[in-house]
Length: 118
Image: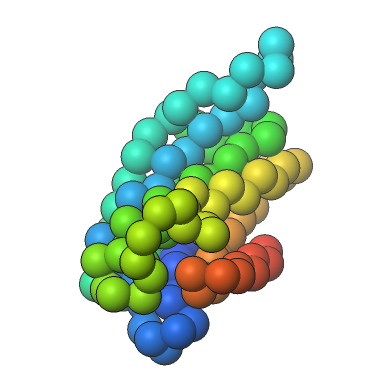
C-alpha cells in the first residue's frame, strides 16, 4: 500500500524537530492548490501516522509546507522579523501511488535540504 511520510531534523541542535505544523496540499486539474490536511510532528520529528495513505494517496503533484519559523523562534534559534526562512514549501510529484514516498526535511534557520527517502 502506498503512503507518504516525512520527518524533520533540526541540524543546528542535532535533534528531531518536534511540534512543527506541516500542511499538505495537492495540485488540482485547473492548477489551483487544495489543502488536504495539516499534521504536527511528534517528539521524534515524525508524524504519528503516514501523512497520506491508502485510497487517499494518488498519483499527482503535492506540496508539504513546513512551518519552521515558529519552531526556530520557540527554540531561540532566531529573533526578529522578517525571518530568512519561515514557511518551507517542498513540491514533489507522486508517479506510483503504490510506493512509499518519504520526503524528509533537514533544516536550519538559514538553509534546508530534502531527498526522497525510503
